Length: 189
Image (cartoon, rainbow, N blue to C red; front, side):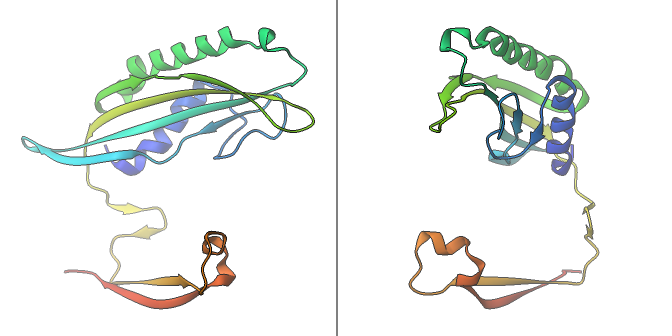
């Protein structure tokens, strides 16, 4: 499998079974919304296994729902979210691993469901359902990336540095960074 196809394929598969308002890295803004979070893979290992090159990685999937704060803790639909967790885990193991050419898929769940209350006037509840999986697949070479084929002759990469004195907030402020140098990467024939 091409690594570039992993996240789009996983997201498309999950969208068939989960009612997600959007896929992003933030909490839902309104009660009744559900956000899916699919961060980049971690713990990546690429190794040779016989005549194949394998990749193993860890992928975390989160589903965050915002529930109206007028509900009492006892009335939260926790059984529903436990059922969602089990159903998605089952479908990942039984269906996704077959269609995505995955060599091995194993799910881990230390704290699959977490509940928190927002510190604002509304006091809405957040229910987070999490799946963590270890996955292995046979690596296929990439032939290009969207919008940038690999038949380039040269790439220029600008490196910026923070102005002094740098404080952590300045690192993300483009106005507080200046172009330090430009790296030139030439294609090796």
